[in-house]
Image 1 (cartoon, rainbow, N blue to C red):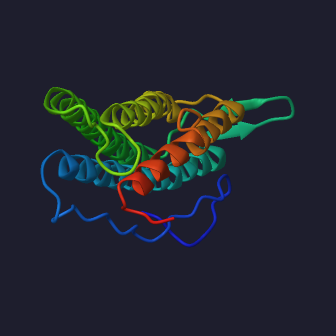
Image 2 (image 1 turned 180 degrees about the horizontal axis):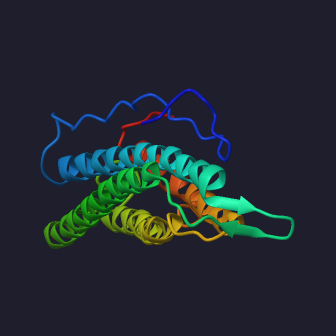
Length: 208
């Protein structure tokens, strides 16, 4: 799917597979559920990053096909050519497969978020001492995972819009807008990295 060549529209390169976090085997009860849940969130976000990188490569290909074969540039404007190359349809099908992967990731994040809520309610029922690891109580995990999930849920909605429209973009500027939207992921802000790193540190998946 990806290659070593930099495309015309994006500097994004697919990195090697990120090692997944292992589930905890020496913890029990709520601690184990929380630590495993954090590993799940981390691994799902790595899968999203890989899917996004693959999708970017496909979008670059779509953009290049349309620029080279579909748009006819005259002296005044970009006029779309009536003929649509067959390879464009195949690339749009590949992009759909990426969208489907992202949908599954978001659904799994939603399920994982619900698990954190369940652990929080259980801990609140069982004990007054709610700190499970270092300083965080379960409600902090809940709010953190909810915020991450909402970021990726909204970003998925944007990816859907890009997929539905990019193959039918009628001019160069519209194509560049969709390409930029996919690349920059406006709903997945820099805060997502801080939130994820904080959970990894709190649960001992990552050391200071």
